[in-house]
Image (cartoon, rainbow, N blue to C red; front, side):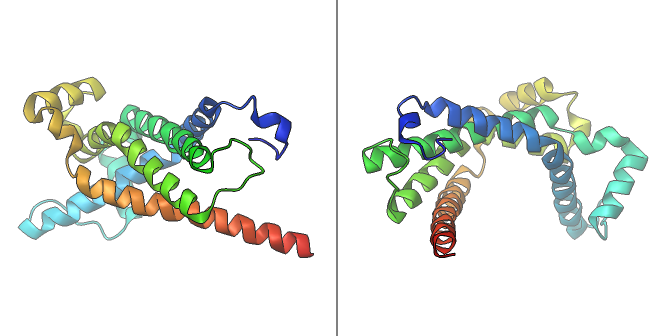
Length: 207
């Protein structure tokens, strides 16, 4: 984002990082949506077999073939609107917050001043928590639409039924577990990225 040029960072906006993250989320949606459908359906059908109901699929290919054959290709893209919203919103806050918190803790926006490992760890963890706080409702809607497509006529109908049947808290089911995972996973992800980048730069300098 800066190309390591000191004169660039003064004109830098965290909004750019957020918008870049949203665009990245939008770009990967086409891959994420069908794989999420398969994951959710596999988990649901396998769980239902504990009660001798439903069908157990041996693998993802068998499930995909069954979905296309019985429900059409569109079945692989159920919950698309919710997934688009989840990814673009989550990744917007993910990258914007991480950049802002690192700069806040190191007390400068100069990209040539590297954050410490602790600063990166904390910023990454909090960025993950905040991104999930905003995107969790859409993830809940996505999961419901992919698990029970026959119950909803579309995204708007899923929102209405969820609000009517579960209230606001229904959009945040399992939120505490998600927050714990989000902090640890994202903190380690950013910390590992910074460490690997530093090692690569040192190795490249020695070459």
